[in-house]
Image (cartoon, rainbow, N blue to C red; front, side, top):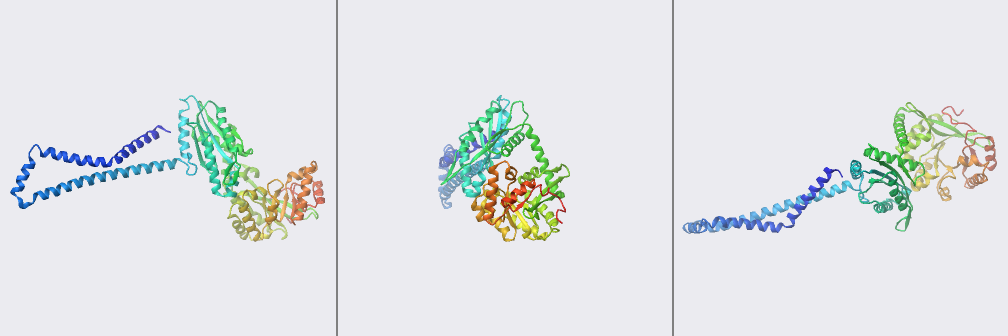
Length: 525
C-alpha cells in the first residue's frame, strides 16, 4: 500500500477511535459538564457573599418574585447545558456513523462483492507498492493471471447461482494458497490474479502456480452437482534490474495467459519477450479490422457444393476474405478469432452476408447460399432477428439460405442454440451441423434439433484411404445421416478418387478443391 494511503488510513482509524470513545462515555461527559457549571457558580458566589446580598435584595423587593425567576433561570440553564451536551454527543455520533460508512464504502470499493477478494483497484495498489519496494528488498516481484477453464458451460447450463457458488469456492481455495503479504484478487468474470511481492527468482513464482493447478483440479461440489474445472495461468516477473511498471507487468502476464489458452488451456506459461510481438500484431489487426469494416474491405468468396451422383452444383458456401489497406491480405484464421474476441463477428457476418446475397441473386433459383455462424452469434438472442432482417433488406429468400453451426457451439449453450435454430428454421432457413465427428454432439441433439444436413469434417476425408478407422467413421456418418433423413456432405475432397469413394459409400454431396477453390465473384452461370 502506498505511504500516503497508509498514513491516511491511520489518521482515519485514530479519529474513529477518539469519536467512539466520546460517544461511549456520553452520559459521563454530560454529568461532568453540569457539575463544572455548578462548581463555577459556587466559586463565584461564595467569596463575595452574593447569595446573602441577593436574599436581602429579594426581601426588599418581594413583589418582584425574584426567587422564582432565579429558580426558573437556573432550571433553564441546566436544561440548556444538558441539551447542548446531548446535541454535541449526537453530532459526534453522526460523525462516527459517517466515518464508519466511509470505511465500509472504502472496503467495498477495494473488494469484490461476490468473493470478498481484493478487486482490480486494490490489486493495482499492492502491485505498485511491490514494484516500488523490490529493489530495497533485494527481490523480484511476480504476478500470476489466472483464468478458469470449463467455467462458462457450468454458468450457462446450471445458472448463475451455481456459477457464483463455484467462484466463491475458487476464492477460498486461492486464499488457502497465498502466503502472508501476497494479494489474491478477482478481476471480473472467471479471471483472478495474485501479486507475489517477493520472489527469489522467476522459478520461485511457479510454485504457487502449481499449487493453484492442483487445488483447482479437485471437483467443486455445489448441492448435488460436482463441477470439474481447471485453470490457465500466465506468469510475469519483474526483477531488480527491470524497469517494468504495473501496466507492463499486467500486460505481460495477460500475454502469457493468452498463450496458455491458445495452446489448449490447463497449464502454466511464463512471459517471453517474443510474446510482445504477438500482442502488438493483434493490436494492429484489431485496429485494422475496425477500420476495414468501416471502409468495406471485407468480401465474400464462394466454394461450390456439388451433388456427388450427378456432378451438379447445388449451391455455394460463403467464406470471408479480407485485403487490408494497411496490412495486405489477412487469412480468416488470423482475423476471425480477433473479430470474436472484440465482439465484431456479428457485424462482420452481416456485412459480408449482404454482399453475398447481392451476388447470389444472380444465381439459378435452386442454388443455395451457406454461411458459417460463430458460437458467439448462436448464443446471442438477437442474432436470428438480425439475420432475417438482413435477408429482407437484401430481398433474399430465407429458404435459399443455409446456416452452418458446429457441434461445439451447440453443446456450449444448448438452450440458446436451440432457440436460435428453431427461430431460423421457422423462417425457412436450413440448418447444417458442421464438422460432424469432431465435437461433442449426441444422437439426442440430432433427434431434437431440426438439422437438414450433416457435414463430415475434412480430417476424416483426408485420412480415409490410409486409415481404416477413418473410413469406418465416414461410412457410419453416411449411414446415420441417411437413416435420419439428412443430407450428408463431405468436406475436403481433393481428388476424383475421394469423390468416387464417397459416392459409393452413399454420401450425397461434396465440397473441396477437386470441385473448385473459393472464388470471389461470378461463380454461377
